[in-house]
Length: 234
Image (tube, rainbow, N blue to C red; front, side):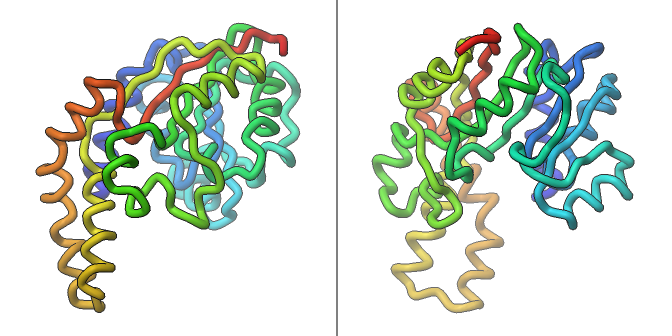
């Protein structure tokens, strides 16, 4: 699973390289263990920094990857205005109680013309429609808000961003999780069945990827990536 996760991030970094290449300064908000920042640095841009609320994850990224990580949140971080060219927000916005407030902070940190790249679940997806409460994008209580492409676009525009591209992810991870959750509840899974479902997860993901790819082609996948340009005004 770890190798698949890193491979997915490598694909993302390659696709987004025009926004990540030097001399751009890149901030990853909610950077976790720093894997994405490490990939960007290895690809040729050492001007990377991370913001992470978990002291444990931040310490790992500092000590094992020698990355520049600040512990805290967008509200507590104290970088000067116009510090970064690109801000990454990978599956973070849905966890925040006030997404608009977070975007205001990001706008302050970005230089005019800079870019925000964010990943969120898409509640207007086939997976959300068919899996219903088993769709992993809802994930209460960790996910506090949900977005469709339309509502996310509106929010970005209201906060001074111009959405440039919306890409729909094609691999079947959300379907795999939804099927696992459905089976877990229907079969009243104990520890052994839960472990078996975990072993089957890669196969379920692979089997459901054609359906996910079709949803992506129709603009209805469950996970989207948006590139938005900061216009410098609201």
